[in-house]
Image (cartoon, rainbow, N blue to C red):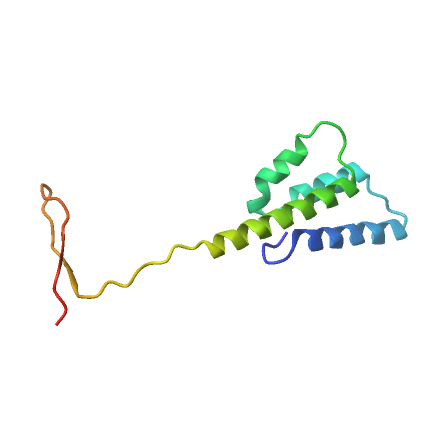
Length: 115
């Protein structure tokens, strides 16, 4: 899967391919389809995919789509929160000069007063 596009959108494309195969009388087992979608998750979704693989019981295609939708919504909200809470630096007035250190000295920053 591609990182730039929605995982749910790409999953729908895979399901549409499965329907096209069914039209020509080639059926894929649902378990195979579900696990192949989970295996195609982007690298950033690796932990989520492992969680889905190790769930007890069978994961249906509908359950997978619901889980993907919930995970994408959660990731979008988390990303928005991270963007809103970016640290901001204050502007320091005056020139700074960092002196070169020998191995035994501690770092110090000397500032020149503004003119």
